[in-house]
Length: 167
Image (tube, rainbow, N blue to C red; front, top):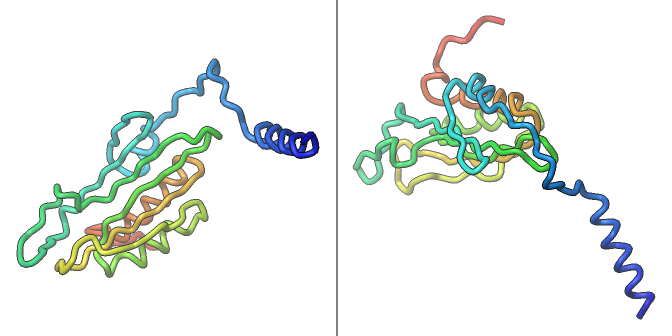
């Protein structure tokens, strides 16, 4: 019995010591979420340590079975930022885009190797235009993540057809 117990105890001690233990007496410095507002260009909301930026798609005139769906019914890109125990910033969320915008959004957010696409699916059945929900997750520096998301936003709505600066 000792032989079985000792390796198991060693394994438990190794796995616990290999992770960063949280010390409740140490409080991390507050994160400046406003820097994300500056990059994305809109104000977010902090609730339960999650900073959420919501960007409604009022430019899409979506109809399902001939009936209009207002943007306030959830036709919005939403980004949820929160702090990982390791100190880095994590983001999970979704882009809501017309199907012809989705590939460009994917290409833009994957440029920095910090954001991974989790899934993509239609938002509605029989919608005109076809609206896609592109879900993602990422981890890294907050402003760098926001910059990648901003690049993705550059491929949807009015920003897609805006005049681009000559490089």
